Length: 99
Image: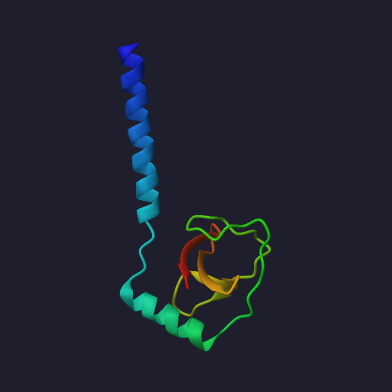
């Protein structure tokens, strides 16, 4: 029984570590942050509604949501419920929410 408990604990910590590492993988450099903020201000979009989707970091948006490009930045953006959302275009996951 003790062996099973130790293995379960090890698996839990391993999976928890993977989750933390995945969340830390996306780092927006300050220079990119400035470029994104300035571009979004100059290129405002109409806000859209996405029923059934909560705006949280890591939430995947449906493929039907049209993402807009930010020049020289690999991420895309969209305005949902009057909040600008930065999205990874390969996964459609929200990586940052601007108020």
